[in-house]
Amino acid sequence: MSFGVKGQALAWLGSFVMDRTQVVAFGGNKSTSRRLLCGVPQGSVLGPLLFAADVIRIAAKHEVCIHAYADDLQTYISCAASDQITATSRLLTYVFRH
Image 1: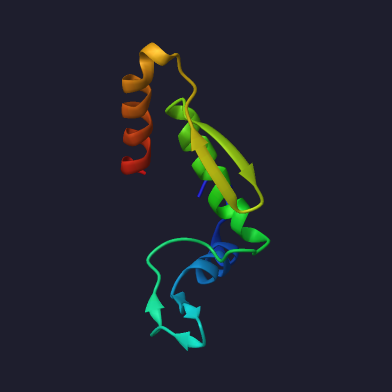
Image 2: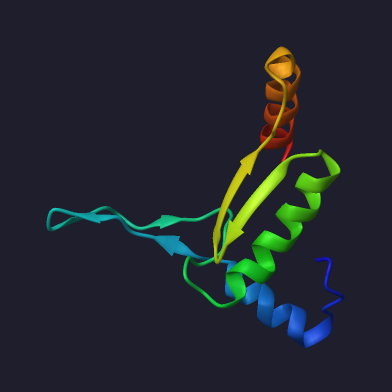
């Protein structure tokens, strides 16, 4: 983590994001519970801090732009029409490597 959190505080933050499950409800039906492998709870106060800060830092290294609001992120790249293939390749490299 890039915030310098250690010891008991780090253990507490780890418990916040580990061993999470998800259920989808639609039309009065519920799915079976599934274990989540990654992510932070949507709508949480800590979500943007734990998730968005590192994503924004990584995106900046790859010259990928980010619009962030609360726990929503949108990634994009601006380019000239003649450079669309290079820009698309750069964006896909960022998305699939992280």
